[in-house]
Amino acid sequence: MSCEAGTGLNACDPGMGPYSDGRRVLRIGLTKKEIWKMRRCVCFVCLLVLIGCRGQKNKKEARKEEDVNQDSSQREEPTYTDYGPEAGRGPESRTATRPRGVLARPTRRQIEFMDLELGMFIHFGLNTFTGQQHGDGKEPPSRFEPANLDCDQWARVAKSMGARYVVFTARHEGGFCLWPTKTTDYSVRNSPWKGGKGDLVREFVDACRKYDLKVGLYHSSSFDAHHRKVLRMGDKDFLEVQLAQLTELLTNYGPIEYMWFDHHGGGEFWEAVDKTVARLQPDCLRFGPDVWITGGHTGVAEEVLWCAVDTATGRISDRPTTVDGEPWGQYFRVWEANTTGNGRWFWHDEETPTAAPLAELLEKYDNSVGRGANLLLNFAPDPRGQMPDDVVARAKEFGDEIRRRFARPIAEAAGKGNVVTIDLTRPTVIDQVVVMEDLAGGQRIAEHCIEALVSGQWRQVAAGRTVGHKRIYTIEPVAAAQVRFRCSKSIVEPVEIRNLAVYQVGKD
Image (cartoon, rainbow, N blue to C red; front, top):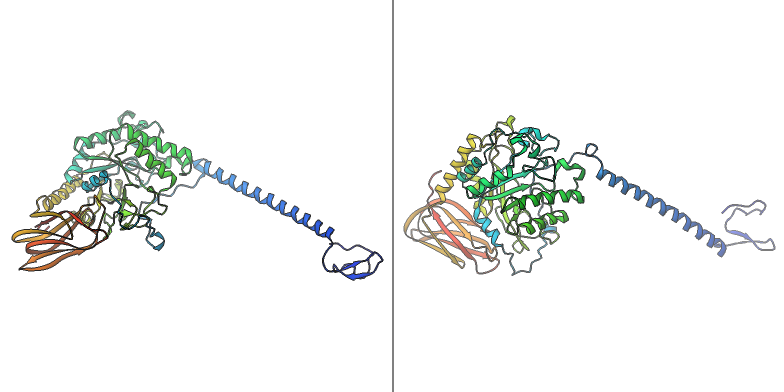
């Protein structure tokens, strides 16, 4: 409020005001007219501030949209990380939604997949020739030129190893497609291999079927470095490219038993991917809703492993909230441990990749298949397009040893209830026990032990918590007349043992 000239001594004191006769009094407050003017002024100022904020918000949103759609050369390079068990444990993740007493149950296909147990992972593509691990999407297709590619050899190696399914990188993170896709020029169609007429996915699928191996295809749907203009999963165009490629893979090559999706993170993007697979091939298992990783890339499963899981949102396409499942989880997952058997995932000349020692591979087997998970073991073909000689030899050696150990049990049994017994009729030396839980009605066993009748006395020789698909115990050799499995704790009764078997393996 301003001071007016000629109003006297206290003219600038806002508490003073004149009467009509010129007298001055102390005034507390403002007149109605002054209050009305002040309110109008305040409202006008607020309106200006609101308009300014909205303008700034619109500018920020416009800049954000511009960042999303700008040319890839001006954008920050995408960050690639090897997949691992990002979902952690904690009280906030314990969000079981299924009522106690109602177990998550596997589908027929999940049970069949668990019975496969051992698979071979094959990483081969443009990265094999560039030395890259993830692929930046910039290397030209002209660099893809295997001299003597032989998918039949891959299948023979997998078969000798004892693998029952094979997963092949049809398209890795760099975006280079190993089939002549119509969705992009970044494929074998523009490579010198077979004059651009080759189709590596077709050769792989045909070889697997020739050798009675289940077909799995890897597609890194959420990471496509070549399509950086539409890199973000929220972009409709990006999703359309991924779904179109999956449609080609799932309609042009016959039945595909397994789609392996790296970086499966849940949300609307992955829900659309999962639904596309289910619509095109209902019997195809999906990494995500049907199968999940355990142990990162170590090839070692969690010691306690429940196949039931919860997800943070309650949707089946989202990540499990824990890395080892929940007894009362809402959805059933098959657990799969993966690792590489000769160096990194792709062949890298500068590293002189060699096959892992037999003892290491056997240890991975015992700590994956032997803990209720499948084992997906990667071997990388060299730039010729063939498995190197040491891999060929090691894979067969590994398969031979697994067959030697488990092909002929001394005795076996099955049954329902907390105790299942094998009668060996006379003392027999055993050093390995394998127990399998019947999971058709859900996973139930929470604690158990293995006991052997030695010299008329029951002796505990092994103990654990969950069983799941399979539990392998290597024990000190004992001469047992009987061997029994005993369940000491279950979340639902009765438990059912699908198979209890004993072996004499001997020294490795």
